[in-house]
Length: 96
Image (cartoon, rainbow, N blue to C red; front, top):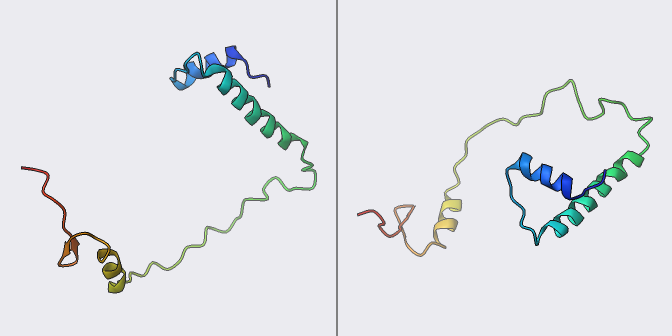
């Protein structure tokens, strides 16, 4: 795939972005490098790879959701605060 000014103009329209004229050359170069990198994937030999190699009939393993409260974590966090009290951060009032 060739990345040129026409393709960049089409990408601008599709993405609702505007690329400034002084950056067009740089972006075309970067997009060309990305496309050539992705083209390398087509050279991989995938003949022996099953189409569903990344899929599993099993569900995703989930851990037991058990709540825990370690007060030492709260204390460690609050000791770095400039002001704290009653296990809360104290911040300046911003609403009058």
